[in-house]
Length: 304
Image 1 (cartoon, rainbow, N blue to C red):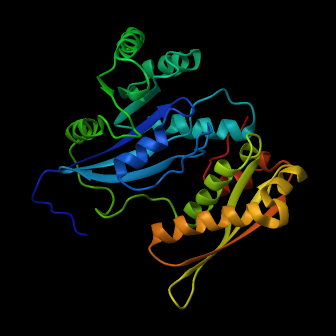
Image 2: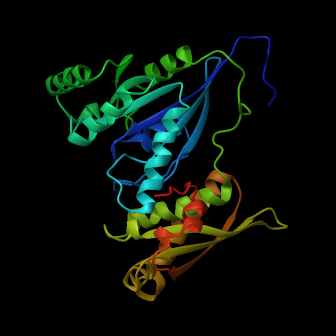
Image 3: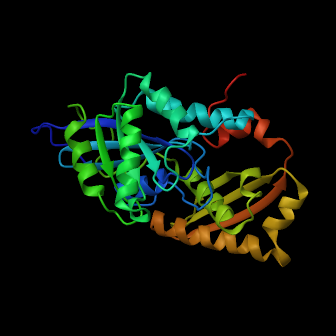
């Protein structure tokens, strides 16, 4: 789609940061109006930066979802945190998303201190406001404002959509003037083969026990368009231990089939064409220390 250059346009990057499970991915999907980032009830679902693209008024808003911030230990963790903080460096606006149920934690205080030392515009977004009383919400807001001078404050529910329209309007009005950086009908820059792997990983998060999802990585080995217009996708799931492989496969392969079927349906819907998804589970001890594996899932390698 060709952009109309006769009117003034705005375009800029808006980076979402916060603690794990603050609702960043849910908010991204709600703002874009489509499923761009995978979501699960478990923390640390997002592992790398994901771009969502939308047009509001005459502004192209480039939303960057980032991994939830936590104290890194492994090479894998450090790569995730690097992706988060690098996402703030190029941002025109940073949205600090706060889960109001947990309030002002020590981890959140650390994030605020780091943001205070940056030269980015930071807006405070209090999420899940439908889950606490107004009095508690107002006290929390006052405590956060004491910690940092935020340019703007919003109270929303990413799940229900409350407060979303005002947030979008304000973002559209405050991005810098400039041409659009992406075609107007684009929703993301995420490659389809990486998106397919992410949908499989989402199902692993949803259907597996607490320990398993964090010991798994998913890669698309092959992504081919067939002569009938359908897509064949071959995906490999790497696990750290033999026990995790058995859990994912399940009795007579039932769990793996369920994971594949649910991911296939979503992928077919999102791509608008039939998809044939094939899964293979392999044990690979130490995959989370392999630079090639980190690069394959969209993370830059952090050197110690």
